[in-house]
Every structure is written in C-alpha cells, then in structure tokens.
Length: 344
Image (cartoon, rainbow, N blue to C red; front, top):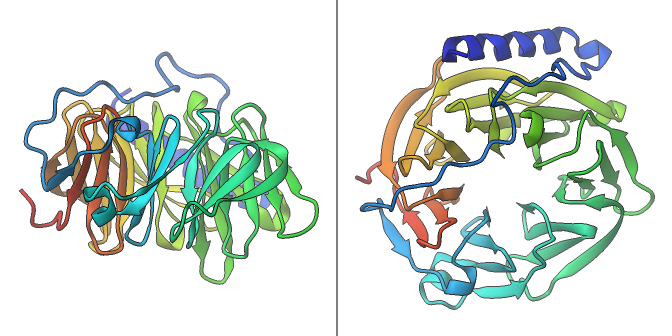
C-alpha cells in the first residue's frame, strides 16, 4: 500500500469516527488484517557510527535497555531483570539506584513523582527521589500496563483480555470492555476535561481511546501497517510510530482519538517522544540508526533535524531541559544529546 493511500485510509477512519462520536464510535477497524500487518518489531541495527552527543556506558547487568521513562531530569531504565533510576550525573558516575524487577512485569510508565510498573496482580511504584522505597498496590484484574490519572485513579490493562480497569483511590474498580487486549496504556491531562486514556494493541496495529465519562471504549483506528510505540504530549497529543509502514502518525485524544497527520520517516521507526522545550516530535529509526526531529505545527510535518544514534535505539525520552536521551537495546549505552537543535 502506497504512503498516500495509507494516509488517506487512516484519515478517512478518523473523520468517520468523529462523526460517530455521539454513538460511542466503538470500532471503525475491520477485523481482517492484510498480509504483513501487525506484530511490528524494530529491525536489527548496524553498529552505531559516531552517535551525536555523549554516550554513557551502562553496567553489563542493566546495559540492554528495554524501556525508558523520565520525570523531569530523572530517568528510569528498564532492563530484563532490573529498574535503574537516576539523573544523568548519577548514571555517568555509576551511582544510580538499581532495584530487582521480575522479567514477567510489563510496561513502564511514569507519574509526576514515581515510575510505575505493572506486574500481574500488583502495580509497583518507585519514587523518583528514592526508588528503594517501593510502594505496591494490589489490583483485582491482571495488569501488564498501568497509568495513573491526574486525579489519582489507577488505570490498568493486560495483554490477554479485552478490558481496561479504572481504580479509584478507594473502592472497587470500573471495568470497561474494549475491542482487544492491550500493549501500551498511557494517559495525558486535558484542560477542563477528564484525562485522555489511550491504549494500543500491536497484534492488529490499532490505537483506541477510553471514553471515561461514559465508562465505555472510545474510537479505534488502525495505525498504518504496524504500530511500534506511542508517546503522549500536552493537550491530548499522541505520537505513534508505524514501524512497518515507515511513518510517524500524529493524533489527538480529547473527545475521541483522531488522526491529524502522517509523514514518511526513515526505515523502521520505533521510539517516539514529544519535546516540549523545542516543540518537536522526535522519531528514532533502527534500520539506519537515525533520529529525526519534526515540526508538526503546520498541515504537513516538516523534517527539521537528523542525527546519528547508537545501535538499536528503541527507547527515547525528552527531558524537561530539552536534552534528548536514547537507550540501546543492544548494550551500546545511553546517548545524551544536550541540545538536539544544534548538534551535528
């Protein structure tokens, strides 16, 4: 399928979903997948050549980073059996805090003050200031992904059942049936409205919002040919990589999930991040070890920057200071680009 056709197809779905908002827009996605769609993976990388900025070597037990989140200038690195938390200075000095983590635990997310990991029948919270003071909340429904809303509610989902559970700070959860199990689950505050909740399912390359006000699933759209990862920004912004289709997709998720833009990017985009300091969307593509920065303020995203990365940079965050941090899944270290708009 050509890029223009893909964009037209998904844009049509978004418009249809908006028109059906009053009806709940429960699904605008065919159950049939074309050949090669869904279950996207980042393609292997060649060795990194002169990555931009600085590369911090990580100790072998935690060097192969599977996921990364940040709270301000503090980063959390998820490796197969550990979570490492610290500032960049801590990581340079090899003084970051590392806590054991079961390989069976799921997705890593973050609140304003703690990193969150879903681990089956419990959700673990690791305070950014002292991750040794782990807090655990037992949950009624299995969880492989979790996010915390601005009002304190805990939201969980899992990769085996089509449900999302919303737990108040006290009391029983509200369980919402959704179209499929969940890979990623994220939330972002909205002005004057409940937080936006967005989930993906990689197997059928879909993205869906949760209509929390009506306690039901929201709109559901296909993300190109193979969704990789999503990241949220302010005012309901959601960025998604179409890893198989080599695109960046830009959504909003205020009333319903809506596709606004798609743009071709270098081969095998995976990690994405919104950089509020520079107001850019960043995409790390593994096939060529390249990071691209996109201005999405116009009708068509414009490529503004292109920088070399470490091999298999499958994790990416933008710190509050404007620095970008990428982590290698192959043990090549933590790449820090202090000012990506002036780096070469």
